[in-house]
Length: 246
Ligand SMILES: NC(=O)c1ccc[n+]([C@@H]2O[C@H](COP(=O)([O-])OP(=O)(O)OC[C@H]3O[C@@H](n4cnc5c(N)ncnc54)[C@H](OP(=O)(O)O)[C@@H]3O)[C@@H](O)[C@H]2O)c1
View 1 (spheres, rainbow, N blue to C red):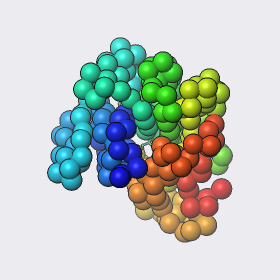
View 2 (cartoon, rainbow, N blue to C red; view 1 turned 90 degrees about the vertical axis):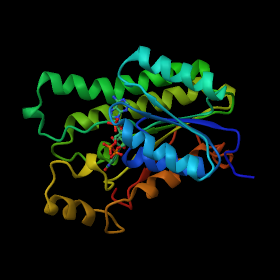
View 3 (cartoon, protein in one colour; view 1 turned 90 degrees about the horizontal axis):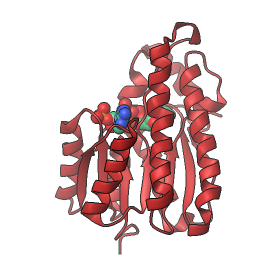
């Protein structure tokens, strides 16, 4: 039997980059997967198609995680379609890569709206609607421990995600629910490459003990462990998935 048989997983931002690989990986392990997206329906449909072609079950749901009504609707539609939610992966996020001096008020608000408010809205729903023994994985970033220039407001949002997760783990533990953080180092996706030179990327690759940039599957495999039965005694933890960068 597949390890996630009969489990229903919601992956926010499950249509591209790391989230798309998490969607595929959880589906391969037997979960029914909701691929959430905000803009790119075509890419969400492609991921869903891959899942169904491999014999899995999948649903795409457009919802902006920074809008509390849309997050409620994400849970409503998932439960209406699949009957329950067992796994929530808070992966949706954006990066604004600039020195603090150059960040506008709108940019500051936008990144917090998506990266922090979005996680808060989904956790608030999950607190009452996640099935007993459910699993939450929130994606942070290794930059909360690196103090890299241009990552200031992004690191601030991820710091908030980490604190929310640790307290949430205490609040839902009595239902057997675990909540953990995965903090990737640089991973080869559109979000990471945007605005960086080849030299920037080589420099970051050299910072890892393993001497390379991460691949999406490096992260998806950690998430798979944290949503499995085998990880039941791990909660409130932050797993650095960064090839030994810090
Ligand atoms: N790549 C890295 O180096 C790295 C390192 C550490 C942490 N992370 C974190 O890992 C997560 C995924 O990053 P990534 O590199 O895979 O990013 P990505 O390739 O840019 O993909 C972002 C995903 O999030 C979705 N999304 C964006 N805003 C959304 C919103 N308001 N509501 C719902 N979905 C939304 C996008 O959907 P659409 O396609 O519809 O726009 C897309 O599916 C993020 O939280 C990021 O901070 C990434």
